[in-house]
Length: 397
Ligand SMILES: Cc1cc2nc3c(=O)[nH]c(=O)nc-3n(C[C@H](O)[C@H](O)[C@H](O)COP(=O)(O)OP(=O)(O)OC[C@H]3O[C@@H](n4cnc5c(N)ncnc54)[C@H](O)[C@@H]3O)c2cc1C
Image (cartoon, rainbow, N blue to C red; front, side, top):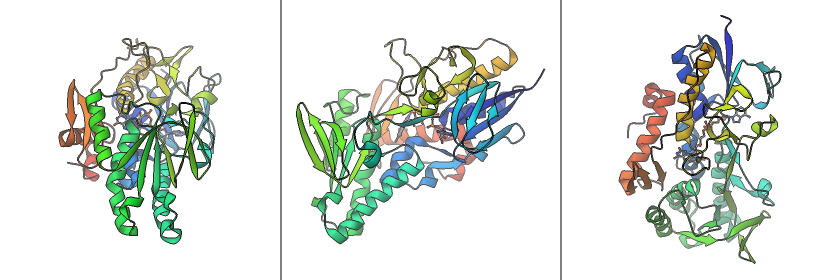
């Protein structure tokens, strides 16, 4: 039988886990994985690098560590689009890559909902360069305050009060005391403000857990403001509460209010909404049974609510296991299986030694939740990078 070619786009939670599984299943196919970086990033920890409580290399490891060179070719390049008719992937710098079967796992991009000034002045937590930029920007504002004493430099505003926002705010409240000490700033001058259109922070949790999280952040000095961000002009943030427009002067604005799937999806002509394609039950695309989409570029409908499941690393990794099985089945000419999501619970970190979460219907708070968060992170690390990567990273706690 002629050897086929399986091409995987993206070496994130979904893509790299699919590759790892396929390397074990050994289909009669050449495997190619393409990513713009030569490292896998543990995206679920990006907020720590943004706040400055972790360094980038603590949450990244080389893609090489997962690749079986006998079976897999890694191409480091940026995917521009997929040409479905000619079955080719167009890359920024290299020649196009042809495929027989394609898996798209290109993750997310920040979604600014057309808010004016956001592209120019807003910062977002999306990848390693973006979080390094946030860290340096905040440090720079503290440094510059030493020169000009402009107090808005010490005001940090976060748009959105969901999961990423709370995780970032938790880390930031751990980091701020260090910045205050290093730059000899009066503690009362530093303000951390979170703006959210509704009073419902952390909507994925029950009210008891959400209130625990919000109260913890309030105790550490975070101010919550109700409002919908409408414009940034580089010095001011405009937000609306009802019909009234208010402004805040701040040196830093970080947007956590929404993400969409990779723009490659739209550029490739798939039927999509905010970069996400509603996939068939076996993760293939309607009209293209040779293409599977997983992770943040896919939308899997929850039969109970009729709405797509939230995009998470958890679902991306479960989809990867199903996708690897189905790619193998497609090569073998055997039937594919449907993807069934099994919700394992979720834990939101609130900085050092604190978190809130729900695991198997049980509420967790404080240190036990924080320990559970580390267990989940290490489990993902082992499932993709393997035990050796975990040992190399010294992650045992
Ligand atoms: C701060 C934060 C905390 C989070 N916490 C949690 C959590 O606790 N639990 C949870 O389950 N989820 C969490 N999430 C969500 C989770 O990180 C995402 O849902 C998950 O990363 C999606 O996985 P993926 O495989 O779709 O894409 P990703 O893991 O994002 O990987 C995408 C890959 O594609 C590559 N890529 C992108 N564009 C291109 C291109 N054009 N060309 C080439 N390569 C490209 C990237 O380099 C990357 O390697 C969090 C997200 C954030 C931002």
